[in-house]
Image (cartoon, rainbow, N blue to C red; front, side, top):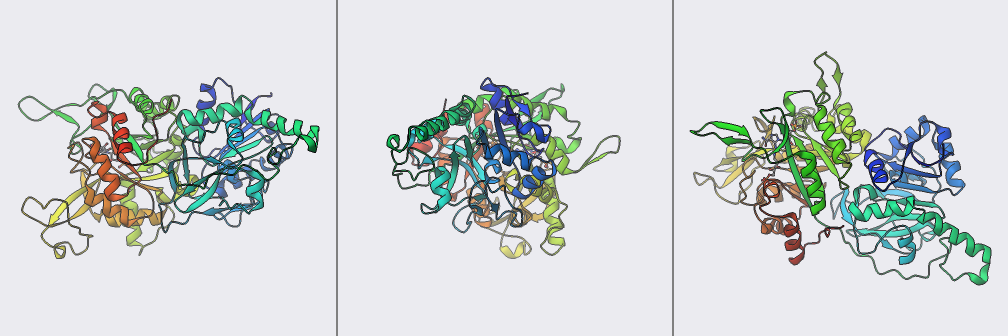
Length: 571
Ligand code: 1PR
């Protein structure tokens, strides 16, 4: 059957691509066997995960050769992220694994000495072939797109591949890389159009409606008309005459809306919100009452997408009680959310090895796989990360390859693994009172005038404290392969008094991976403070958004007024 085909080799979240294509009114057919590839009118390859495993899967499934043949025939192709990187000759991510070699050049690791790696968030894609070429592919110069990657093809104006293939470049910190390529009918993006809100949907639409193909037809027409009709730069194979503006880092800060989800006493799945992790109302006469119900997960997530959230996170906060593979409501929540929400989705709670009631063991990797297939882009690991860090130190500062962090990062890439930290402050009079822990000075002294504190890691939603501090945790998790830290604070949660800036700053300094500050946002200025004072990449809030006390839009406009770079709410 002809049509638009999706090349899915079973890793990561391709559901969002399918949903986006369907939202744009197109059907999509999954490639099920190698011969399907050459049947496609259009082929989308949303490569996900690590370069080595992507290439291994392409070969194992027999897709590599037909894919090369398809590309050699210059047929309509859209590669996304690893789907773009795989067209190059190789990647430093898996040094001994050759790429498809369609595009000359190599994918390199970002330098993390001056910036966080992965490059995770929204950034521009500036054309070097002229605005019309970019518009043909649905790209606009003043919009931002969602990137998540640690490796990229560096752009240097003198390199041949850059001249022949690069359509746009993007600057991250002091490095400029190729953020999209196009030649003839082959078009690829390093960013994720399916996760880039309406700006990204326009890019997909241009491909599906034939934008790349018509540009290629224009090339063919020009070639036919002969040299007289050609102006330099008219064809992608010629050196462009368009002089691009000097590149600029336009990376934005992210605002994350977080939905803590659990079943209430009536058994309905609701978004709830705690104060210092207590999610029950006060009952009359004291004691605890009903679980707070602040809305329905799918509806609320959609509202936040429309209001301009840059990411949405779901935390299944009672996951430690039951088996997530049977917890179909959360899988269903993700599936339904990804039909209408086109920004990254993270799911946390219960990412660990689980045993079904019938005794069947599912590894954390399998559990995560279920969530990725249901529409998650990242999984967040709480309790299991603490146990993994404890083991890391017990082994003398190394992993043994079996933790959830290691196995998931290996299969899906570090960028898909977030560590959710649930710390509790422990005040001490002097650092000597906690000799085995990382002690800092809190913003406010303790109740008895204590000038110091350390942050104790907890598990099971804060129910159990461990002999591990947050500094130890994040350092170990980064070494094991985590890609991002979601830093909660049990003390600040729901209190609306601002983020714990001392804690956030300390964690920001401890790791090179991105950090999301969480817990305590009560007004717009708290977001400004956390970005300006700590340099974190993202800030998360829950209660104030659920109760409409502080609209997302107003957070963004305040940040913009105060000079913090953010993504405009798009439509
Ligand atoms: O341990 O891997 O199963 O993961 C459990 C997950 O559930 C963890 O990510 C943990 O943070 C979360 N969790 C467990 N219990 C609770 C609870 O509240 N009782 N929620 C809980 C954590 C904190 C944030 C909250 C921010 C912002 N909630 O998610 O959204 O503090 O709130 P605010 O803006 O209103 O201050 P595992």
